[in-house]
Image (cartoon, rainbow, N blue to C red; front, side, top):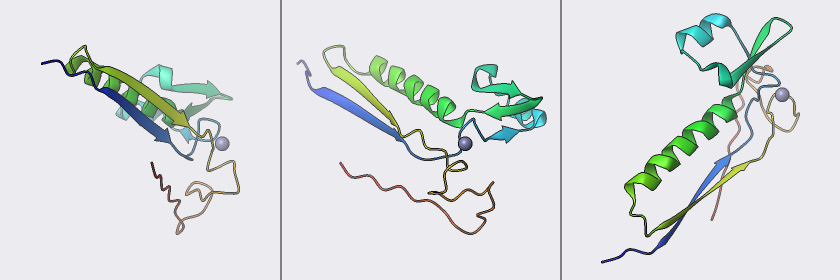
Length: 110
Ligand SMILES: [Zn+2]
């Protein structure tokens, strides 16, 4: 029996600290064995791109999902990134910026 249902996977990356502001130390990179595709150097500092890591992991998960579901299914990934940096923007709290008590909450409804 064929299963011809369509599956749509929606992933949403909300506001978070971005590579423009997320400075990390070299020992952090080494300890977590982070791939060099996920960070860059600027003025002798290291900046990590967390959303890029999340997008990579979502895409890997999506590919695994696609491989485990029968070929008759069509699977579509909709990856949404709001591209908002919580450190740069004054609209969000940022632990690194000094907001130690406040938190951001994202609520989605489909
Ligand atoms: Zn920023």
